[in-house]
Length: 497
Image (cartoon, rainbow, N blue to C red; front, top):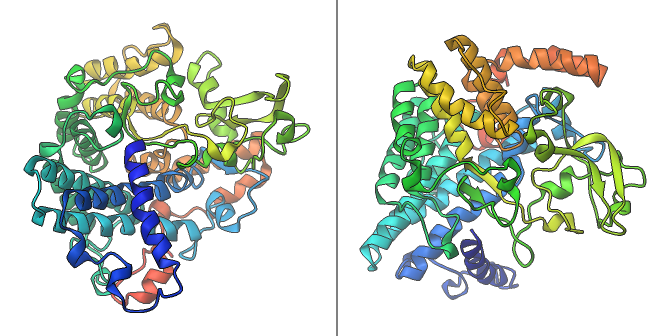
């Protein structure tokens, strides 16, 4: 999304300079954009959609990983993370006052507000008809994604489809089934107008393939397995048309030369200054576990805040090439090339080799990766009784992981296949924003977290038994932010919170 991002700097930067002016509070239409006169040209339409994309950064740069891995079994807080709200997520003590569940709600609704504005206003602009339709399709894809996040985290949520004012944001929660209907409608409309691909300068925009795969994930989440199979088949059975496939090497998904290659379906693109570097490298990098600290590596900073659980790390076979691409314990110093070993494994999917300022890492983060589509297709096929065919797609991912077919699954029953595909999703997609969603949609969350607590207590930290003591059945939904409940008298809290 390099071109998209740079354009937004220019668009937002102008508004920011104006808003910081000491005349900010005066009613003066000349000093800011006004909806009535802003949407009048192609440039305005493109800027509006760019603003919808921009909201992805505030969600996917860290929050989607935190809320999918920390209150699940893949991540824990390192010594560099004293934040009590994050500690509460890890130990299942979170409440409706939690900062991160509140920000997830607010940031997705901010994206929805921007999408609504674009969807309503762009059709009225006199411009190229095909481009106009495509831009509206992109906004609908993004609105569907933001609502998909909300309905999975919170269940019933207000469905807002008009220009958002304070009054628009108020109201009762809409039944989840109705929210899903809108998500499906947006994605079906988006896929009809989005292109299969873009020019190199516009890589990162939503495509037809991304809309179809996301819709397949929606159906899978709803347990509509035949619909999920049919929709995912449109892409997977025709992957050459869409240009999709698996990299030969798993780690190529995060290498600068290949991260936008055949496996990228939809991703958040990060870049060196003046662009936006991802925060993962600085938050996940070694510090306390490394003799001499991060300074011995020639790094300017590193926090060791987000670290893997032993439960996750121990699931990987040493022969699985995903292990070395997901974690490392050995780090090469930029000062003299010496190797320094951490006492714990460190997440390194988003690590940029040779970067001395971790805040500037430009490793991209995937919203949808093609391996995810293959695993979803395999899962859906198994659920409609096509286990032998499902094995073919499951083993494509498995075979890449081990660089041979010796570890492929064979002769699995439907029940054993479920166990296998759930494990492969965990190993393949670790720290990519899927784990909590997967555990909840497959009705395994409570049982798995009790198992996780026992495992961590036995091999890592005895106090992890607190997770099993704190977890409750109602935690298959996150709490509605208390601030939103207080502001909106019609908004009811989720049970238990």
